[in-house]
Length: 71
Image 1 (spheres, helix red, strand yellow):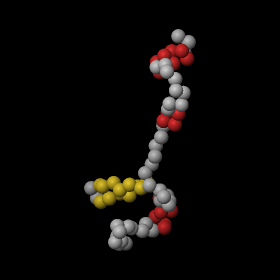
Image 2 (image 1 turned 180 degrees about the horizontal axis):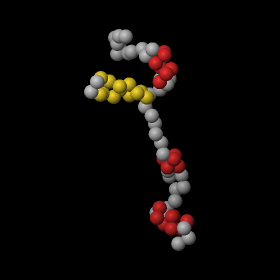
Image 3 (image 1 turned 135 degrees about the vertical axis):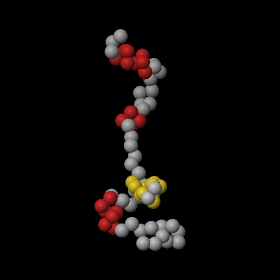
Image 4 (image 1 turned 30 degrees about the horizontal axis):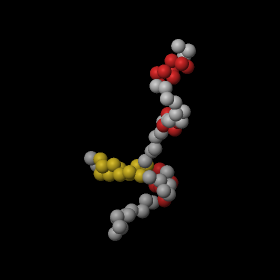
């Protein structure tokens, strides 16, 4: 394999399929002691991030929890 004039490299189809490098998939290059590792970017998300700010309450979290507990 060679790096093209614009810095592009073609990943063989068998490797793309085996490791799930699909079109428009984000990847990252990670320097290691032995060279460079190419890996998929995994987007982790928290369920809290998904609903954060949805209630738009004025009370503090501690006050809400105490009210839910009936105190």
